[in-house]
Length: 408
Image 1 (tube, rainbow, N blue to C red):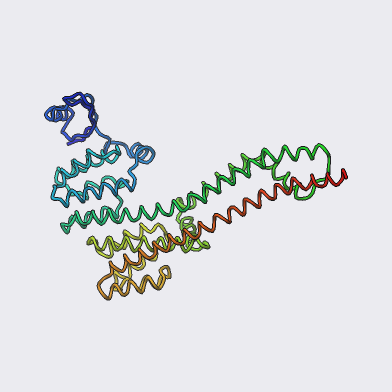
Image 2: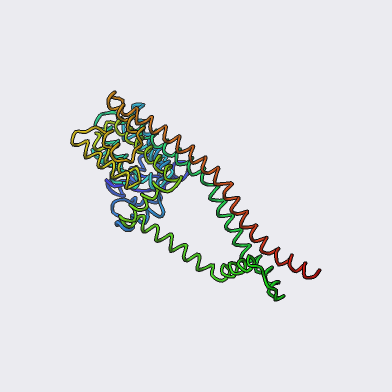
């Protein structure tokens, strides 16, 4: 069976687009006619037959499925399955209403594989760019326990919580970032266009300029003549930092270590990572994923190699028969409050509940810290820009005052 993308006309002459699975194009045409739909164009949907390079290029640059779209799909699939609808018809309904072309094609191929007798996990595993290992492991556990609709509901809740947290963090950072760029642009325009015209008058008068004015003229001339060099250095620095962060193990370790130790931001990054660790681990355990498998998945989700190594070492200790709280405490990456609450959860048999409580507390703390930090950044940035503009104004006015004194 193959999946075909079609453009067709119905009995009223309205254009319809969609996907259909059939052994070949002729069979797809016949299948559409049986549904009183008359095909105008049929092409095989892009899928496994693409080369690795072309597929990666197409997916990464042109077609993406956002986390929000996956969350909506997960919630809808959970609702359909919970209402008693079989899996294949549920996938067909979601495929028809999907707006994202890549998600639509992916659901068509998943439905085809499920129709052939494969599991939902096997079908989804063909699309790792849409369904990460964390997602697949939870679906696999749900299928094994017969609670796929409940697992999908937990997945949707987890995804929505994570998206809400990320959205709050981004919205808190938008204003300072925009303010920084606007302030930098204004000062750059002043230094490269306004200041040279004013200081040019002083140069024509051959007057000895004050030290601050001389510095201003030097900086202005440098920015006006070598602005392109600054852009090149900035681009090279960003590229080198990105390569160091993503391209080498040592560089990534240094970057992740700096993220945990940098003043102010370090504590926030640590709290966000711990919240993600606890929330993800609780969701996996509630869905029936074994602890060791869950630890391996979570290690790759915290997005920090230093904390990831602490989790990996804790998993090794658990495999040797130890509890979870002890190894985490020995790593030094987790505060005593976290490890003590995990210990209480282990002793009382409410580990998942305790992990969710820790995650909620640290998510709220990180959001509060970010709001405080951004509220402090705003006056600091205003002060810095005010000092820069004040320096420019004073540097220009000083020669004018000296000229007035000479005239008198």
